Length: 418
View 1 (cartoon, rainbow, N blue to C red):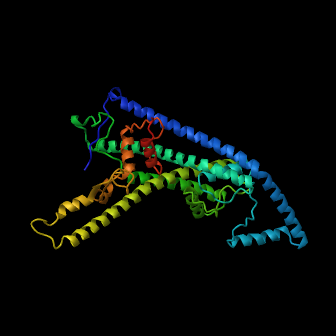
View 2 (tube, rainbow, N blue to C red):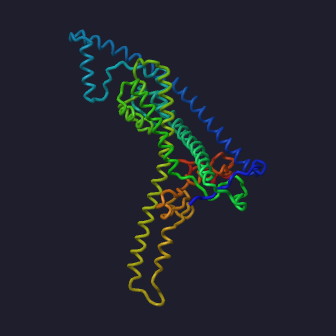
View 3 (cartoon, rainbow, N blue to C red):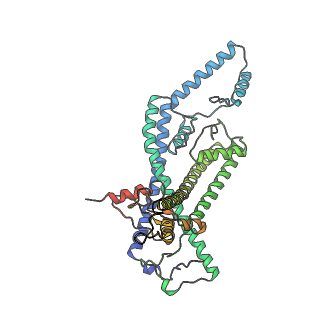
């Protein structure tokens, strides 16, 4: 069945309430916070690259100089030509022995190399191709990674909010177009929502599965485009390039394949910029996709627990009430019991097992095209309605989506000015 939505009235802007203005101000404040955080992370990366380059680059130059001298002495002592020795080492490398790189690599601790390294640190990719060798560099990495990883995780969560907001508006627009095609119009009594906000879309929620599908397609497109670039620039096969994209974008970072490590490339500066750009886009898309998939997995787990709990209750009642049916203690109402176990409302204040304040319904879960899933579904509805929750706290915390959403809400509730 097609659900009705509220179409914006012609003079909707003139009827905006104070709560709507506060929501707009809060949205602008969140966008400003997101832009400020991105700027600070970029400055943080540049400063970290300069510091790591100053600490590690002199030792790298000294090690390369010592290696060239030892290689020259080895070839002269054993009367082996450098070409034969390199061919032997290449065969050794092709035998899948770690630690051998025959091709000339770019300097790892010049400024571009150090910038690539700090990017893999704060994004938690950690390829392992470049690691600090000095004690001072290792000590600095501990404190640098502590702050950088925390800031980057916050950036990913804010990016996820922006993506969810954009997708919610897109899905609402598609839904409105479908209603216009079918000729469905709003009745006069449904012109305004229960809270008096004319922009609300009462009774309609975008599907989380659509969001998951869109994010999956976006991540796939980014990976395909990046794989085409890597296969041509790194001389990898397209499958190896796609494999590298998944390992890098998901921040697994094995280190068996690492991009932008050769000494020379065609259009080297453009390729390095494209490499940075694709890694940032890919990590953001995969992170957002992982968050949405985790919500679906959590809903499946809750559904399984509900089924197990329902069966355990039935067995317990069947065992304890089988021989006690009389006029004083009648048989339990199976219909009522079944309905109570299926439609179960669990809140974070009443059930410690579920901290997200979500509503679980097995019937709705079985109807996969009409499922309302937890916090993500609630956020999609709010952002699509254009009326975000007015969480204007003095401490700056907001609801949000993602791994830190629940903790942000708890901090906002507990941090009260006294």
